[in-house]
Image 1 (cartoon, rainbow, N blue to C red):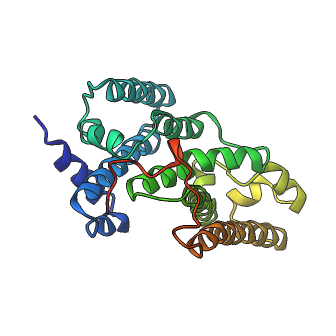
Image 2: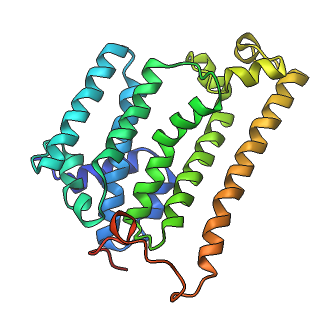
Amino acid sequence: MTDPQQYCQEKAAASGSSFYYAFRFLPAERRRAITAFYAFCREADDVVDECHEPAIALAKLAWWREEIGRLYAGTPQHPVTRALADAIGLYDIPRESLEEILDGMEMDLTQTRYADFSQLHLYCHRVAGVVGEVAARIFCYSQHATLDYAARLGLAFQLTNILRDVGEDARRGRIYLPQDELARFGVSAADILASRATEAFRQLMAFQYQRAVDTYDRGHGPVAATGSQSAAARPDHGGDLSRPARCHP
């Protein structure tokens, strides 16, 4: 039988991401948890990127939804979910978070255009913001502001990825830049596909860039304010927002 931890480690290493090397500096318990979670995200992402038949990809995502159900019922089958089994209780990872990540992946299969930023924001939250929130749980956050920061940082990262990959995504049939903003700046899908660096396109991209920068800045503010409080002054949020009881440095 495949060793779950070894499988997740190999999955994370094969991604070529620098995240994998950062994980190695964590305490063993958290390292295993974040590696398993990262492997889960890679599995879901690979369904979208590597499966060229949408119907088959949707069927695979449906299987992963069922597997999440088995995970929370205590009967996971896949090496990734078996590796996650201890982490979901130890770090209080909500089932809804893993399901929402799959919702975001499904959007990539069923939606190639975004009418406005509210639609794009939902997509970014599902594929990146929720990932940040789960990571914050594994890293043992102690303030609710940290969850807000993690979600906003995930949004900023995803907006940055969209800016980086505008041409590549367009060639795959996906345009993430909001349609109402393309119209406002006078940029068409044909302009993006043809990689025409018109003045209108440059202005559009400058607008998108500034929004990403502002998102980074807004994310740092609440955490900086929280960090300046004394331990005695920090609020005790309790319940679902509290530091997981078994989470320790």
